[in-house]
Length: 218
Image (cartoon, rainbow, N blue to C red; front, side, top):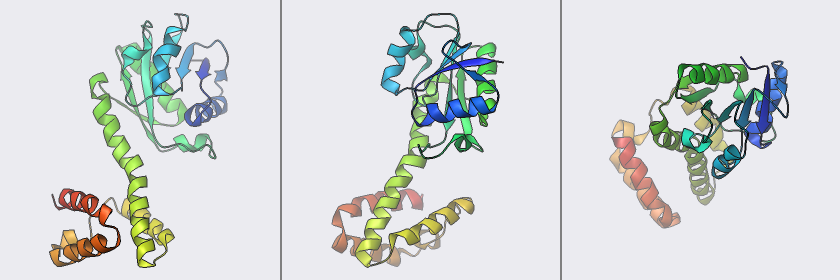
């Protein structure tokens, strides 16, 4: 659909997107048929308003509404549902999904084309649903980091190696998030033993354990 794309932003997503586009034979140039904004969310509106109208304009933010791309009418959003690391390349797109928000069939086609060109599997997302969608994505990705950090603290306090948690976490994902453990078995004596141990070793973590246990029980 687009033979040339201007990518603004050379961070984790922008650099990976530029590399993948070049792999797919798309010219990454200063004046493209599409301007792809891979900039921080707070900068999207300022960058968009400074662009000349004419080419398509899109952003890759998960929570930012399309109104941030004013005054452009040929616009869409394509959010890669993936976490990116600077040390890795365009292969980070492979196997991931992408949320496409568009206001017309033409914009939807453009968004789906971009996602598929990058190696993503696109799905449609309503503009007003973006904050809720992004909250779910943040829980799945960012809070996984938090949970690993908290579990690692408890392992260190117990004299166990935190690196031993990684295979357990990966297998939980590989098993389709099938719940196991004391709550799934209804073993509330063990849950209470957890609480007592945490209260002694890391009392500041007990409220978090309680919230997670309640959510898991439901």
